[in-house]
Length: 102
Image (cartoon, rainbow, N blue to C red; front, top):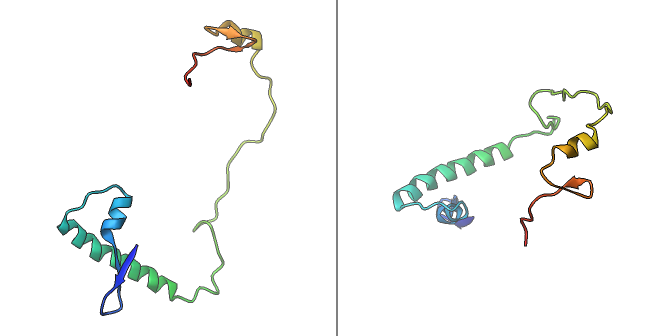
């Protein structure tokens, strides 16, 4: 993805390569526009990498979250015979469906 380093030591992103991975067609003006934008993004990421984060505790979310789930309780299911009475076709106590893979 990094194509080359220019005379200022800035890594140049191969925008055409990235666009090809995303299956996008870009004309020359769009490549120039995205080139600057992607280089700006890379510079911001480098700035974040320079921060001292040794005192920051790793988190998976910015705010504490709690999963709200009901308790898993076993309950009776549907009556098998009643369900199979509604099946258009049955074979060996199961729904029979048309074959879709040859």
